[in-house]
Image (cartoon, rainbow, N blue to C red; front, top):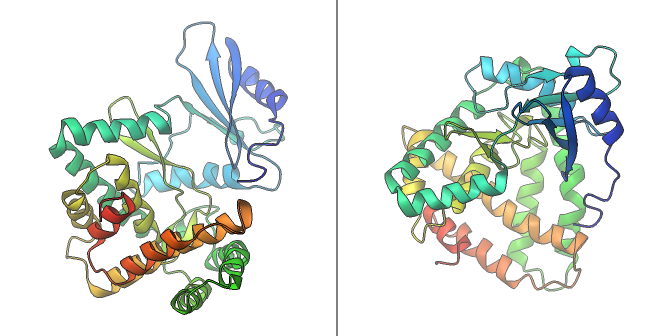
Length: 321
């Protein structure tokens, strides 16, 4: 994506913060990230490394996490970061920040999922069930009970502003099929409706020392369209690398919708799933190549619109139709 990570990280601010919190800082190393300045902090004493996430100008992601995560943990969603320090512990600081113990980073967490499917499939299936259960608990939160969460009005404004130019580019293409234009109209109507769920997770995971996983990267934390959190979590199942993801999808659905996947859940889940396919296609026109070949995206979207089995969506996304 154009412009990604081209800012200068606030290393001076990071060093100021960690030296105020610890007396044995050895080094502060920047970890490129999209919505904040993230640093790995090491110590001369042999203390376990910490991760400092420092807010950047005009992006309230860190400020929102500082307020929201403790509340989410208290309400039964313990799969978010537990803070050691936050900006509330340094009242004089001009920055929003939080500090956590270092955990296994996203690339290695993804590798652990693939190894699990290869070496211990029953455990992988249980993890998929946990994904579903965690999703159900997240979606059940009331945004009004989560400090600093985006309101329905804010969610609508953000989604409309973000997706409008990408879908405008998509439907402006002469090769855009009529059914895609009709689907885009449905998406535009969908994101203008007051959100009735909770979500905003971007799909990144860390792995704790006990083997559990934590959900990080919440760019739009708060009120969310129905099943949007579930669609993101379902896509994460692709990281297992299963040629046939049916057992994983069945376990996920069992955790997410214990009573079964009714028609309402299926329709909302599919709309969000296909919205992701075509939305990313529109983003590729905006940020990468306005003349990109969208044939594969159109084929995948059309297939999934006509398929009621989410496992078939994942098989096609993995290249195993």
